[in-house]
Image (cartoon, rainbow, N blue to C red; front, top):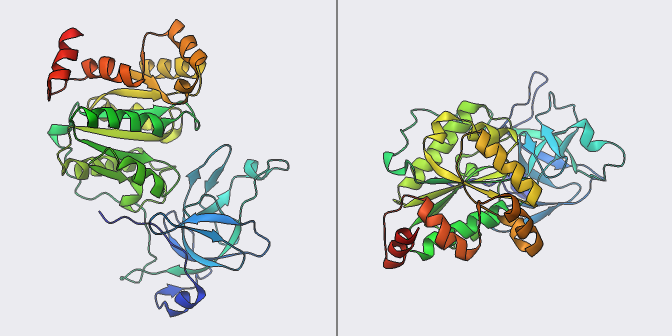
Length: 352
């Protein structure tokens, strides 16, 4: 898959484009529409993600390509596709997703300062229609049977739970033990080049929803979300990984995470879930949610591991293993039906 990240353009480059068209009065904004925007005067500066690992500071008067989309952002930030181009539009995330901010985000005293932009022109595709990045599944291949029971979901209790940190720990311990790992990022706010760079240190392949052209996953319907994950897993299987780690970037109760957790199709495919938590009480609540949904919790990690007293408090109330390096070796491997690759794993499994 070709990775798709939207980049800022200079005025000189914009002037050379021949496939842009000003919207007419009948145009109704749609999620995924690609357009040319201009940052309004007086807008606060914001950093955008561009090609590779580079970033660009968005300044008043600057023009850039962006994608209209809904986003579930950090803190209390929520955005949606504007009903018309007359509505205020804002850059809601560093990836350049543009939409109307929810009213509660802009309330007095909220402390949020979002860059305001205006839509200049729509970008047209080869067929003359507005270029749209929305994922549309056609002739979806079946999920490879080889992956059944070899998928690990990693989710968190909140935005600061350390989900990525836990997923990285799992990938590293499996990689060290000689198992090949693929990493998949299924939901989030937008392109994140740092995720792929970090994940590649212990994974044979790293795939994200943005590789499908999705500007974000917020408000995807269940079928779209299921098909997007299915396609990512099909691509991941091409490298024949022993394990695929699917990272749910948003918290367990967030809409898209909840849809995946309660999808009967995926319950039958995964080996279990590793939970990242920010505190002992958050971990206990997260485990209760997973148990109610019928999932097996493998380990608990993330931010909880950074403080000794929080680890001790959690262990008073739960016997789920903490994701320390030693526990991952001694407790995680016996919970998984692994194909033994070395004498150490044979010893661990025999002693469990």
